[in-house]
Image 1 (tube, one colour):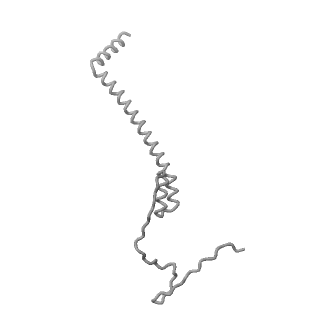
Image 2 (cartoon, rainbow, N blue to C red):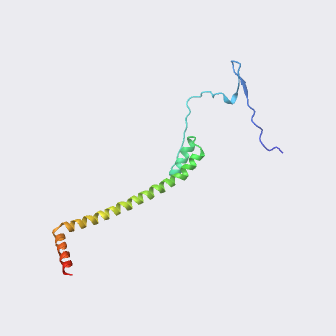
Image 3 (tube, one colour):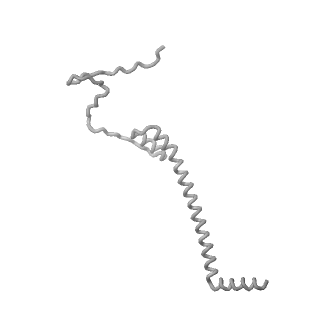
Length: 124
């Protein structure tokens, strides 16, 4: 009826100074520099980030946050860029309109147009 694995029995070791310690808490013996050979093949950017994050020991929560917030950030930046582009076009059109009106009013043709409007109002 007991289908669970046996619990791990800690190994107790007596050190040369007479103290007892658990064997799994002893520092590992140094075997030289550790070489990590990691291949990151061409993949979608979010998958590459996942692989790097998991390979560096980052938890699954951080990877999930990157997968969720990565596209969300791209969408937010795209929306902001679209709004700024619209405002730039609007400012350009309004500036062109003001420039055209000021140029026409300030020239000789503009002065003649103002005289014609004044004459037309007086005739009424």
